[in-house]
Length: 355
Ligand code: FA5
Image (cartoon, rainbow, N blue to C red; front, side):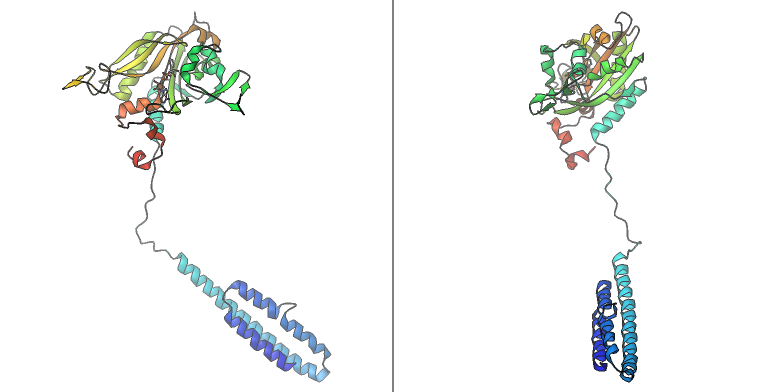
């Protein structure tokens, strides 16, 4: 019995000496000092001894227990101190070293342009509004004087939302990804808060992809509706915007055009900065423009049928609207010289970090 106890002690001390982690320590404690551990097992054998032998062996057993417990405590102190030292070494930080500057990004150039454009219109009282980018074709076409099946709709190369080949329909017709921000016109008029000075900037989608076309792009749509609004106000707002955004030397002109939802309709041109509106450069024709003018976008006086669709009496109210592409407008000003408009959205940092 005594030999067995001494043997157990020798073994336990050797095991504790080898312990390196808290997990190993716990396993060794359970093995030797646990309620069902080796020492507890050995103590059970005491019961079978006679009184003298029991007293003698009991004394030895208590000594062995104290020795193993002392070894456990010393090991625990050693392992805890070792773990702390290791953590300290790992977490050590030289605060005197120069820092690593995090890479700071910036807003995408389209977002910068949107902020600037809305700021310019805010100065003349145009309030930024938001209208759905997924909408019923009623707002994208029908309310804009383009009845169902009207061929004018074709120009908008529209994406329809569908489910397994079936075009989804709702309360007000088929569901489309808005091909222009003009869907906001009747939605804004329907609010019934007059006069209206709205600037609606949003994403538009068309089934187009080329060096000059993006399948997803942005437009900014202006709408002014009040009593006695005329083409003069349209021209004034256009002039104001062009001088603020492109510079005080740029001239503007309206060119007759056709849209179903404006009457009369115009294309708006601005004078070319390269040839200063002359169409000529030193050794010939200006390559950037057509005869001194660059096309910015469409506009016109809101068609009476559109005012009616929004619940207004066209004999009482008039208005103008315009809708221009953010990306094209921004590229025209900055002179960003890219041969493919899709470069804007390729997420190539070599391009984006330049702006
Ligand atoms: C329209 O979308 C009319 N809703 C504009 C309008 C509004 C007219 C209000 C009258 C009154 P248009 O299809 O021409 O018109 O598009 C307007 C502008 O959006 C274009 O001049 C161009 O700058 C931009 N744009 C059109 N399609 C694309 C495209 N796929 N990628 C990039 N820009 C585009």
